[in-house]
Image 1 (cartoon, helix red, strand yellow):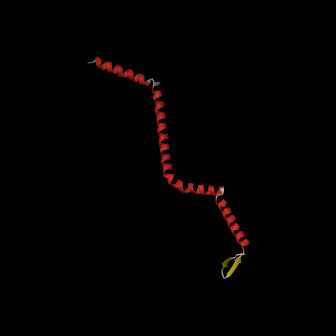
Image 2: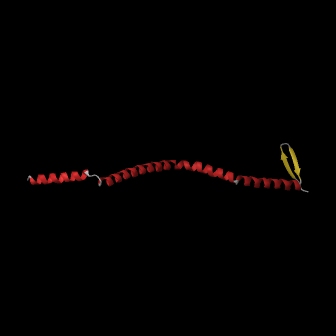
Image 3: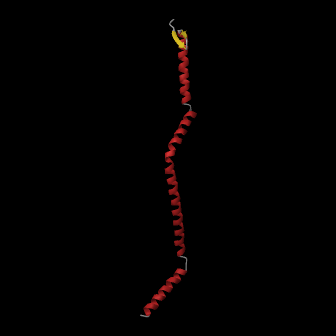
Length: 114
């Protein structure tokens, strides 16, 4: 029977082989348990959340720029839509035909006076 001397403060303890094996087994099982606990899904999700929190702060300026560009694009599309509607409506306005006829008659009158 070989013993292992363990010192704790001023006391010295001698462990036999069985106690030594039991201590090693407890240490190993504790180590495995802590490893499993460290790889627990909820802890893994916490690590992912922590990573997202730290890495997304660098994307905030890009996000703001994209939001600004989206607003400008939407404003331009609204302006384009109004312009298209106006151009479609021009063909149905009879005042333009009257103006065209008045211009042509004025030109004819001016040419006739020459």
